[in-house]
Amino acid sequence: MRRWMMLPPLAVALTACVTINVYFPAAEAREAAKQFVEKVIADPNAKPVEPVKPGGGSASIETPWSERAAATLARVDFASLVGIGSAYAQSSPDITIKTPAIQAIQARMEQRFDSDLRKGFEAGALGFTADGMITVRDASKLALPDRVSMNKAVADDNRDRAAVYREVAVANGHPEWEARIREVFAKQWIDSARSGWWYQSGGGWKQK
Image (tube, rainbow, N blue to C red; front, side, top):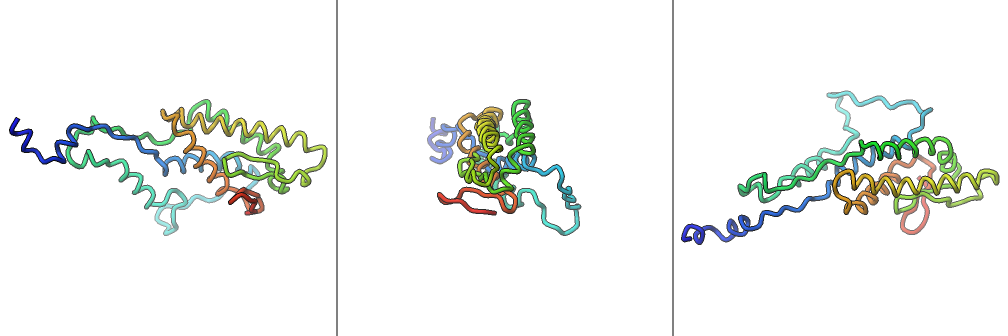
């Protein structure tokens, strides 16, 4: 009993409380969103970009070192620094998008983008919304015969978008992350938008 009472108050508190919250892996989520989005909107007729060769002195196009370092440091919780065993700590998984359900949605979205949505974005008729969806922002940019089919394609795509945000959260064991996943994807759709495409910002529309 005397030995327990002689322990520093901080050590006693940490020994009694070993529950570690799982953090949201923001850097990993951004990278997963980028991979997903770029595959969906990639132009099959565009010339492929040459990969950056190691040691060439060029900056990597992947997650900046500072973000990767911050994500790594975030995993090193205070409990592990003061000697509490790793068995007590819970580490957050990397964000995965490699599940049959997610890849099936991605394939549908990619096909739909190439067959219908790309021409809507290039015509200025469609736009990315701030909540990770798409909408017909200017129907006058579409020929009359194309408006019905474009509205259907937009509705179908928004259903798939809602589904993929949910599936990514569930596939990674944290359904409560769905809103955060949606936020990350919403930003990535806009970041990946090609020149001339429209997106929602501050309650209005802007063109890349």
